[in-house]
Image (tube, rainbow, N blue to C red; front, side, top):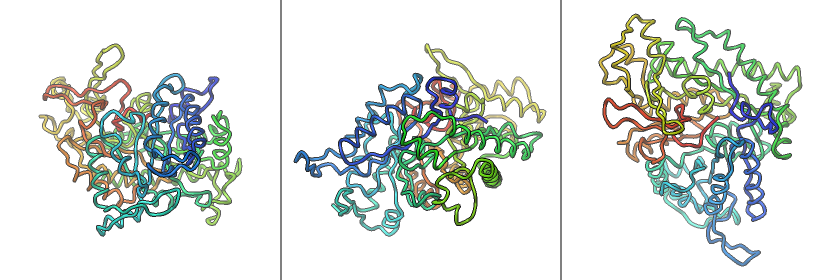
Length: 520
């Protein structure tokens, strides 16, 4: 188990800010916008990532009564947040990270959708459209969809849902943004509905939060719980209990960056215990990632983690009391006394999986060997140690076999034993549908959300992106992100141009998120 990177970086220091995830409000006035900007700067300075719902800002061209002028719209104000992020280094160590959400019914939605097409703008933001069931129904029945001015609450124009969806998927095809967050799905599952609606998530989408909420994350390295090709469920149960207790303790000792954040975080006590090393665990269990067996295992695993997490939080409630806003939660009617409003989340684990030496989050292996570009222009060859480990266990190890695998991104066309081809599937060996099935299996038992990238080959089309986004909605996911290989100049993973050229990755890449934004 490891906590999110701000806990590792800041514990025992003068900073003392231990949370990774924050959501800040952006109100429709100059004062509120710059209050939010200031809060973002303070959070980034201490190592946190921020999410924003820009949907309350009046659209471009709308009247500003105080100056008799015209509004420049939410996208223009987002540029200020992006620029400020570029000059603030998180905890003195790295740049900040942001998520911008704009509701699908905002009049400036098309400008938002196309904001990153130039390949330069908003490099410190992940973008997501806040999609509603109403929009998805209009799309299904090929109807027009109303765009609503958030200031007047009146329809300003109608747009064909199909055309807007095509613009979204084309942009995602070209540059990886925007993703989608399914707002109705998120709010239907929110345990504190009476406190307001959720409109945004943290930068990588795994934690939907109310305004000013923060959340502490931690991940269990699943590969450490496979013994002799079997899961050690008893030991996993122990670590889940320890993990939930650890994250609840973090809430107590945390040094919060703003009094508003401290107040609501302590009242709701949201935590997000998740996993990493999932792909490594599948290899050790001899289960192919793209298989029904993997989906069944994912379901069994996350159901188990969820059940034990509830036990752990219930035990803490007996010792320390329920969270303050429990009386406003869905748990009161169920008489389920919990210490924490939420318990589970699947993060990308981009930083901590490198520390743990395991695969990231629930992502598949992205390559069996690769070259990591490090400081000073040096290149380090890294080979997945599980290949040799499995080969030795199965009695098929030889230096010749290792030489054949050396430098390969995938074993799909390699002359190697069938077992290795079967279990060592890499990112681009796996169909988008199989990626989605794994995400859906986890989401079913996660009360926060699941961060996962659906990877597409360079030859994928906008129609492929459409199919994935529609299937994500059908699977009741809370969010969806795609990445088509080669669609960003600054991507962190590069496949060799020839068969004998290895994959190249940037210094801090551990798999999963292809942007420079995700950490954890």
